[in-house]
Image 1 (cartoon, rainbow, N blue to C red):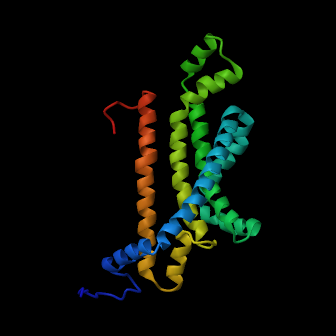
Image 2: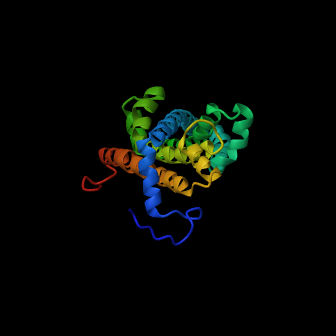
Image 3: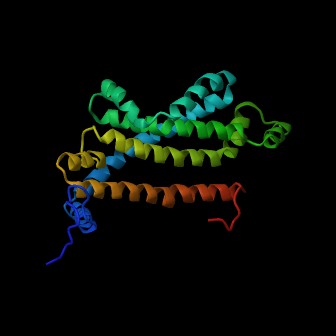
Length: 236
């Protein structure tokens, strides 16, 4: 028999023991595992589209002055718009389905990816471009063999930011979406007054976001920066 000290009702704020039990039971019965699989599938699709679309937009705005002054300014403005603001449009265009959630996830990561790519291309050292032109490089070879490789650190940073924004957008999109994702389970917990489930999902969201950022993207960013000579070998 486990003794519990009840300070306030679980409806307001459940005890750590109750939340821990919810986490354990959720993985034992497979509900959390299923929700994670559904959420990660949506995230990977949306993130891939965001990286692809953001890279194209970044190259476009960095390569042409007219694009930078028009599309670039628009991207900068859209970056400040929270992902949840796109939900009404997503529901209007795609109804309450999978496509609406993926659209919100894609939008969430596209702008930061585009800005990072454009910044990386614009900040390629002039001496590299001049040296390449002196050796006869020009046009597409100059772009693909000099400018793009030199901007890779910014590309990795853009992917890291795009992942973070896409992860947040996914949770916003799943709040009113369909399926059995983490966001949908969060809404079920709220609707049924199960605050231990709500807090358990919040802990999962925070832990997964931190783990993926630190174990994957941060390490990748450090490796790239070190290889490109922008970070000392002793840095970690």
